Image (cartoon, rainbow, N blue to C red; front, side):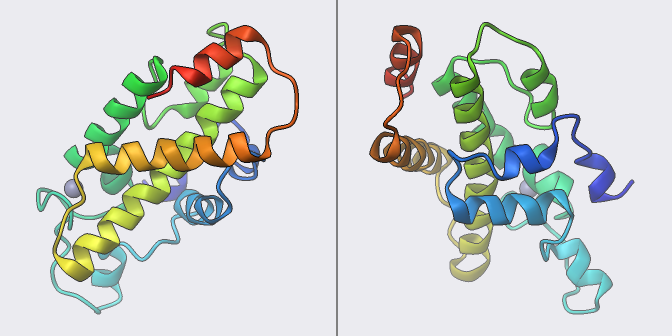
Length: 175
Ligand SMILES: [Zn+2]
């Protein structure tokens, strides 16, 4: 199974990728992830550039796109924290399943969840690169806190539209 097959989204991935609430740089990494174009270690091994394909974050699996974002204990912990912060049930590899159900969530709330999801993918890739270069793994709690802060700060700085009380309360309770 290729990375593209694993990431085959029922939500049009371009919609998720170019969601206006996304942090732009996170969109580019998300797109590369969906397309299986990140230089993960399994690809570097195939290119003959490295010998070892062990995950930088957990050292407990081969670093493929699927492992890094969905199977690694590090990313699993990050997505668990995201779900707790957003008060939603969302399987990291099934954004489309969550998205296609209503859950009583508005379009704005769905856009925000997508933006945080995309930023989380970017954050995991950033944490992986930090572990590769500095041999230091950013604590998931610290990473998630900063991702939520970055997405929310960007939203509040740019949002000039109206929102319902329910949406405002939901946003205010994201911690
Ligand atoms: Zn791992």
